[in-house]
Image 1 (cartoon, rainbow, N blue to C red):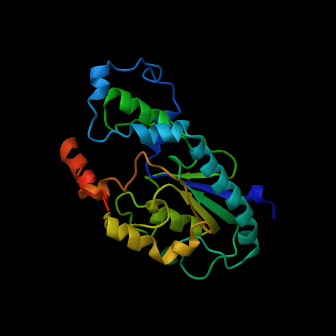
Image 2 (cartoon, rainbow, N blue to C red):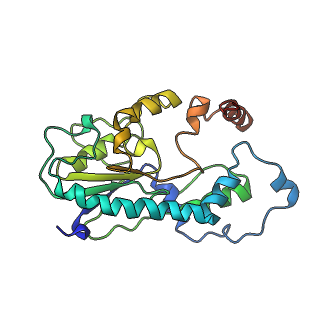
Image 3 (cartoon, rainbow, N blue to C red):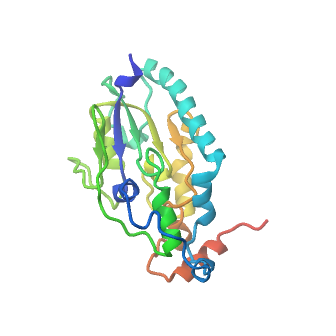
Amino acid sequence: MNVRRISIFVVSLSIAACRQAAVPNAQTNAPPKPAAAVDAVPADDDLQATLWTQRAVEHDLVFREIYRNAKERLKKAIADPKWNALPLDERKGAVRSGPPAVILDVDETMLDNSPYQARLIRSGEEYDLRKVGFPVTGTDSLLGLGTVVKDCKQVGTNKGCRRQLVGRTHRVLMQFGDQIDDFVDVTANTPDDRAKSVQPYVDWIGQRWWMLPNPMYGSWVPAQFNNDWKQPRAARRRAEINALRTN
């Protein structure tokens, strides 16, 4: 079977974020803020994380390594009729013999959204986006947050229903993402629960699940301050500092 004929399903949690980065913006080439404004580090500043994402050759090498190894592993996945990359509770019945498919996240997996993060750093603003479109062609399918899946109850922004939708007609060989939530639903977004959610599938990492690095943002951040975005930025920062290990 030709690998290029595999269906690609883009399961997006926050399409708005990646879309913003793809459109020219007057802020993109804006001059840096005065030194006084830049020196006043906001509570959620991710300067070095964004700089690493954009400028470190190590970032590019990691991505190249992951996708190259995944391509080699895909050959084995296609040949194994029992190969399944969906969480066990999302696969209803036996693994189907339908056409093969790969599920990928968008932000920081298929699309570099770091320019938007860079603009937030320069402006001192927080995440606040608008929709501008994402190109999907051929056999690819975009399953956004508004996707309705029959007989499956959507819980918050979880992607489980959308993954199930793909599994009803296709044999899912691999999943790609930059957060645990891209692979399996997390019941309570706490550090402990995030670890428990992925524990049954740790042997799938680098085999069926492929995790891309994203130090800029993610659901792992609010997990440090009880998911309470209503707290002042300084309070959220204190909670993150308290979560650091010093020994």
